[in-house]
Image 1 (spheres, rainbow, N blue to C red):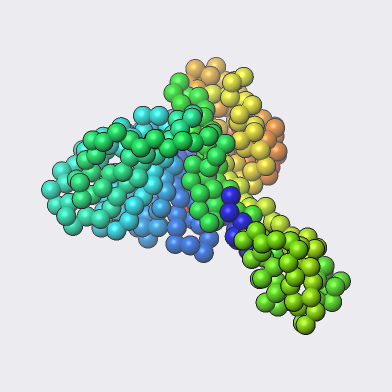
Image 2: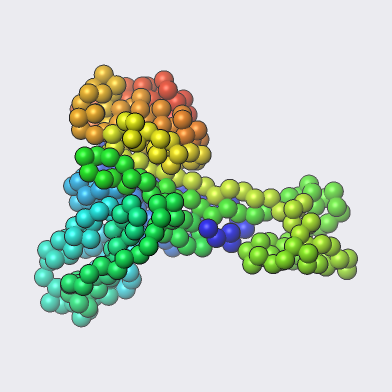
Length: 340
Ligand SMILES: [Zn+2]
Ligand SMILES: [Zn+2]
């Protein structure tokens, strides 16, 4: 985990479609021309300028409502010179390979769009690169990347992305994006020491970033201070914003514990609410969550805000019942912000 951010990074996640349509969560990275997508259902609402910012795509599983948009993104990115990293569960490399091999690439010399495909297993990641200049053909064995389930699957200077294995009669991945912690000077502590803001604040923060020794001295207005003591007194940590994304899983003895731990402390918890409790048997048979179960996960994980989505179409005209049921268990529910 990097600690290089000095300003709190507040991510503003939006669902691309209304909560009863195909799931896609878009997470723009503040102050960066970068967009992350979680799942890729029907995505014709996505603006081209946002599609062009996509750097990474995280797929929970390849049921068609979560992956049908791949071709649309491919089509609208094809003139770009970049590599998109795309992550998914066991079997995923074959799924992406199948999509890419469905087209004829004889004009490949003018294409510069590449895919870096990561297939996540419980104890390792497999990676395979598909390059336009090879006509997206790669018959080599995938590279094996040693990896532990507690480690991030993707990491930059701004954020880290984690995953959890869930159960949908097939492995499904839940995802969590955590912005890096930020560090800010405490104004009242500064006042109490009669210190005014200056370049030295930035220097002090840089010590955190570079792990410089605490016993160093720092000069402020001609006076020397112990950097370690000053750091402890003046620089406050703001924990990074956390967004979790969970869809298409059964809630049972095997998944309840991992789900609770995974969502724990999230600022925003996007969770499927496919069925009402009155149809919990159907939810169990289809390996989906009920609204009550989503609320229970949010409550036990002590999340700040639950955003229900991925409703079954059977509740058309009465989606409010899903909100009502989830609120009975967990009151802090917000309606998803959707993409315009
Ligand atoms: Zn599914
Ligand atoms: Zn689904």
